[in-house]
Image 1 (cartoon, rainbow, N blue to C red):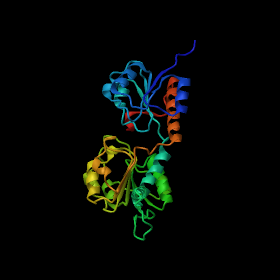
Image 2: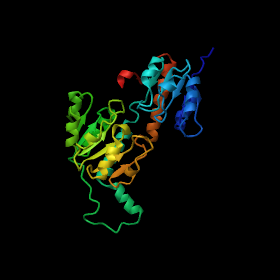
Image 3: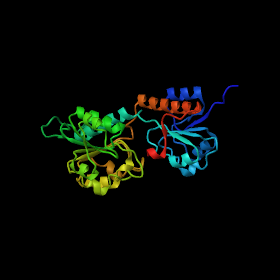
Image 4: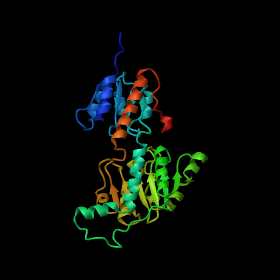
Length: 328
């Protein structure tokens, strides 16, 4: 007698190759449109599915997990960050949680460098000039940006992505500095010629560019608050390709408007799509719609990790990318 196939509910549209493979392996329910599931739809999903495949747009909190049926045994997140899931409550209910680490590292690091260059070289201002048809020709003093070679880059969060950013930034001639919960091994630190700062305040005050590459956890919420932002040099810039909640967005907006910070490049926002309208008006800010990891290759790799996690679980083993509360 053949084994019953796992019931898997996917909350968003995924690349065709991923959806096809999921359908071959499991009894899968896919989305027909790309809108996020409503709270009611998520509740129905956790009541019926053996495995839920949510994304960062789905809030899988204690209340939702409390509605789950006994059959739900795995939440296989399509994403590296799991701040959208109450991992501790899931664990108490005997539900495993997995994620997709590493799949987005290179793409996010690429976008971090793109934002650093875009802000320091004033690329959006140049593009706007061209699109409006206002360019009258080259001039020696027009749109003068800054050279990034020789500048000090302070990386907040030296995990996979932070280290990938450091590799790229070194190739551009930047000096690497970092703050992390734990200092890197000496050999790894030497490979980046990186300077470790135990005090985030002291690092922030001395950097030309700050890159946010840490996850959103209770301890990192508003890590870059108004007080810490005020420590930045007036000619410094800040970029964020991690989680919007790490920066106090209103405080950042006020300081950018006042010229107390030179510029910012943001791919993520504190309140999702509800972005401070005053932030949108500023010439010294580059805003992107959370596209740091948006490559087809990356999205397929994420899907492959989800499939491996589910398949390994289905075979009676621990998912290779299982997340436990102590990791957060």
